Image (cartoon, rainbow, N blue to C red; front, side):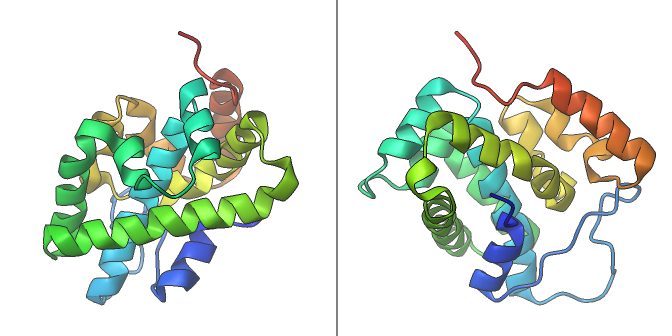
Length: 188
């Protein structure tokens, strides 16, 4: 369960995804980026943060486990927020919404395939939640602030700069935050 989902999806797309600088809230290296890199920079963490948030709900993990490929994952992950998320990804990457949506669909499908392969016979609601909880820090450290995914998914902690920081103090703060954000499902 330790394989990094971001690294896999980056390789899958043939793109380069950077960590976000916590001080500037921008890509760290400042060089000119190819359009595929900007598209991946927005699409991958946006889709993964939607998976993370969706796995916090009991019905969410049940939907993912029962997914037999008949429903596009973005439809159930984002619901009525899908068009807005797609538009934000498209704007960030300076591409059309259909290209952004196609890329996000690819990412969502490959993510599901990868996680199912990673968990194999241990694919249970609890393990699925733990898997995405273990990926949370990596996902958030790559999530561009411009997307404002926390606002869209009603979770302000996603846009918090401390999620993009590294080091002993930041690690301690993130550990404390993880203690208070249970890996289990939200109860109704």
